[in-house]
Length: 313
Image 1 (cartoon, rainbow, N blue to C red):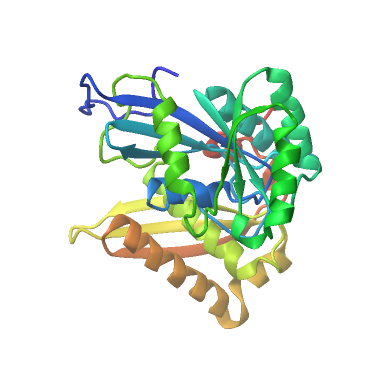
Image 2: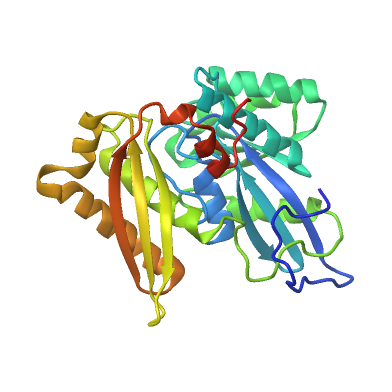
């Protein structure tokens, strides 16, 4: 890729004889740690993380600078066998992200091994003819003999040019991976301003943080079909910001779960989201949450546009 998708107009980009830049797509099955790795590489939270499968719904860029190299990581939704329209759109976005990368990094959860989804991903990557980099994650959770066996099996696929052992959660092996990726990228100007760490608009970042808290607090109780939308964003004279968000669920029973007894659940959810948003935006945040029932929101084209997904995928 030669041009960034959302560089701010008028921004000054670094161009000098020694600068390098490029896109690295991170792909893998659901819940293998892609977003955790992205946040670790960037050194800041740019993608939400939860135990919920398919937490990442659209492509997220994480931008970091290592010496003279600007690496733009593409965090993609987990790749699996889609059953619903939203599933198909997310998987299409994941493969689209892989196609946008100058380099592709496959992440595998060592504690899970080569499951059906990972096996299918490897088959498709093999058909592409590309040499892919492999990072085996969560190596701290697996005994060495099992890890060596898994590594040998993955290496025998013939898809991977280089293999790294990492723990995205703890950071083990991540600096070596980062150094390798920087070495691979071509000479060229930086594609984003030096202080930019993501291409995600603030309104969407705010919605994603609230969705993360929703999943963390209601992982077992709330079905996958929930969405958060930032409806209003008002800059205040004192430098603070007023944010109004709607949490969409599909049934009235789900609304009751989100609200909680006497509104206690949504109050706790709002407090957790507000505290993190204040850390991210480095200013006071006034957050107001509302819950609405929207049946089959997963079939609403407008929601797909908001997420940057293809409704017809």
